Amino acid sequence: MKPVLVLLLVLNLACAPPSSNGLPDGYETAAPAYLVLTQKALSYQADFDTEAWGQMLTDSVEFITPDGQVVWHGKPAVLAGWQQWRKQVGAERMYLTDLTSLPIQITEPVPLWEKTGVYVVSYCTAHLMLRNGRQTDLLLNLCCHFDASGHIDRYLFLHQQPASDLITRKPVPVLKTAFHF
Image (cartoon, rainbow, N blue to C red):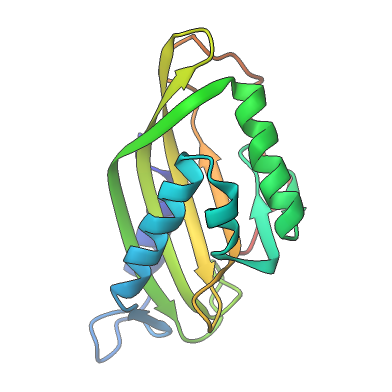
């Protein structure tokens, strides 16, 4: 199953009229440096290194959690929430593979992206080593928005149901309203 964010982005790009740069109006390719920043942030996040990861976040960062309903506001809430997620899942270690990212610059507000600036849409597989010695994989979908100083100020983090039955959790409820990133 293709990640929802990438599918929405592709549909949005495909349906919009092209501009002189070959992309729809309001879209540009973002600098490759944002790919490096995203990979760095994801590495710190996967290592549960909240100190290093926290340095990449703005103080007012917004984090949309895996259930798609709750938003953590502010760096302390995001870092505490991430550690809580780790405890709930029972993850001892996590490493990421098959990372695919698309950096885009939104130059004018459009329906899917209400905030202009740089977004990096990514998906990958997270391999989790659980405290009970078992392993499981999660398919992750992420989207980071960067402020002018190169810090993450919005972070959408979604995952699909685990590939195995080692982790059980409630199904993700259907969102009642669309979230405009």
